[in-house]
Image 1 (cartoon, rainbow, N blue to C red):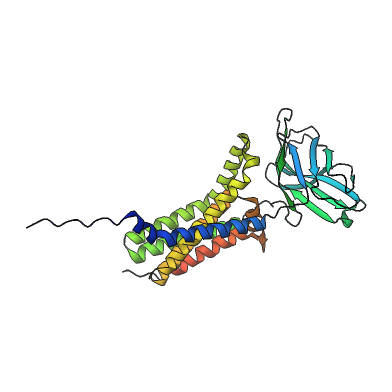
Image 2: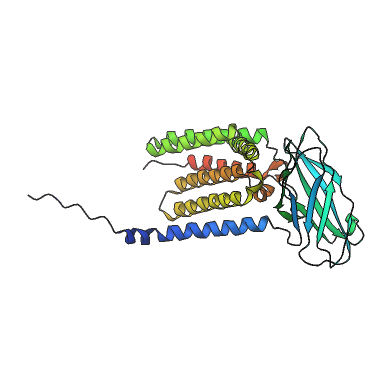
Length: 333
């Protein structure tokens, strides 16, 4: 009796055609996420801002502003604001005398005092056009991205930084609620215990382990702790100021890899309870990763308090609550 002939592996072109919808969906989700992130970090196109490559404390900070398009006669003014080492916004720091604007003048140079405050970590500039120099009469206004400050040597060269329309305020410091953090962690522990007990199978073990990891990450504040550690490392390696486009790419990728599995979960014939549990896990993981990447445009929305609680915490709490409700309805088989 002849041995059975093993089935031939499907050709690479066949595998590619089978996976093409998945790849196209991933690419589309990534492009949509990129477009959304570009929208919520809208740049101010009416000015170009340059600062020294290194910004040391205790020396005047020179800010160069170029107006690409002619502006009416009036004034342009620049104020400097600051954040401390905990990321808290401390408000006004210094100002430079206003300068006259004319259609034929494009370049402006401002020198702003930068005191050697021990807690000074970052500064950002607010620039605005006004017919008479008064803030109340401003016609255009922009805020720059945060500029890291340190005990650096004399600056060498200038670099361009991003400026945003003033409706996009500097990122507020995230103030997590300890009670909500514990509630989220306890919810995940409950969901994992219930899932493991009700299924008593390898799948139940996987769900319980995933829920345990989610609870541990929440209790340890893993997203904010890792984000702070990476931010400090990037600052020491002089990568901090060039990170923004890379952060946007990583954030768009994270959102794409969150949306696509959700679509896959709900296209399969899974029991509703399992589908909802997987959905809660994927959504929670996506929120953790986006929070860890800490793109300023995303943080402005995620850190925004709702009833005194950051929006990101409320999203995590909702995911954990869905997991608990789904776990109670899990069935074997």
